[in-house]
Length: 82
Length: 84
Length: 278
Image 1 (spheres, one colour):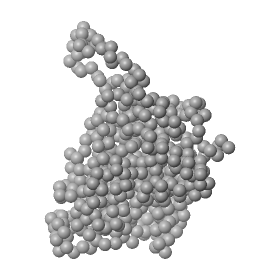
Image 2 (tube, helix red, strand yellow):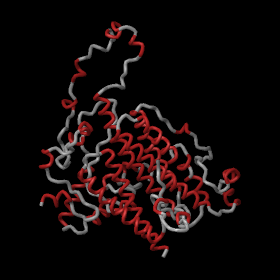
Image 3 (tube, one colour):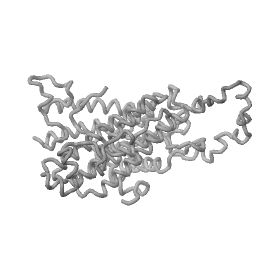
Image 4 (tube, one colour):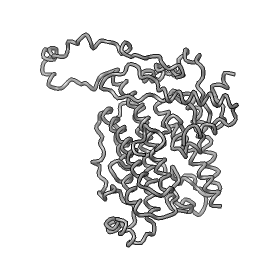
């Protein structure tokens, strides 16, 4: 189960990382249409991956905590070895 | 890890000759950086990057960049390796 | 403002504690070229940047550096977790333990606490951006020194990732620097007339530099030996030149005729430019 969690989290990380890279690229290339296209696509995929993960393993952001008791403090913090 | 090993992953569904050509073009682009036109003395310049191929997300995360032309792993690139 | 995400930018999973490595890695937490210095530097300098591109880049890279700070903190934490004081002392962390136990505290490798004197925020965009370029290279060099001292692949892996990020940030700051230089050339406000020249209008007109020498009129194009060399660069230098930044259309009509770049959509493996044409 832990392994499955890691795999899903890694997918979120990879897509978010790609969004960060394209974000930085677009900061200095604001008129690069192809990069904007890839960014939009990446952001959409990242959102989907994040929602999938959160459904299974709890919120990645406090704002997506929507159950009782408060789930934000439940799942492990990223710096702790799991 | 050098681009040779990584790029084909992004080109899996393409015919071999198209993939090879694309990789060549990519490489040519980053080994022949754009000339800096009208450079002035006393200014510092870095060539502008052009969007080329991109690594798929997992490869990008592993390499630390999604841009093959910026991928300079320590120990593999003489420009970025002094004592490696 | 910022929003926290409960994940690292790059995973850190260290199986074996090793305080010796922690002692060195912590310099990227609170050392002169560390991530704390980097994020404070960029996030402070952004306020005085003259153009939007520079503000955006400093803001976004400064934000990413905070994620890197968290990665380094996680490495130090995992390397020292539950290590007995005796072992910490043997590995040279005795004086650290006396003050901070196994907590993560911003110091450099020699134990000096973090200081804002590591960074500068000058109010001059060129000076600030050139400092940022240097900072990225210093951080890259530090990561290489650290990688050379590490013997645990679990530690080397995230350090390698962080090192590569410095290379990418250097490229971005270089691009920002060019755009800023171009903007400043449009209206050279950075060579403000010194106050002493304002004494009287007559005095100002008699400055020794007002008669421009004929050599300085050589146009940059005349000097540039190779303005159109690379047949493979799909975007003409003029099109990427910062001068075109203000214009709404980024791709000139002439350029649209040129063969499309071998652009790979990382998801489909198909070039959008190519599909658009066929």
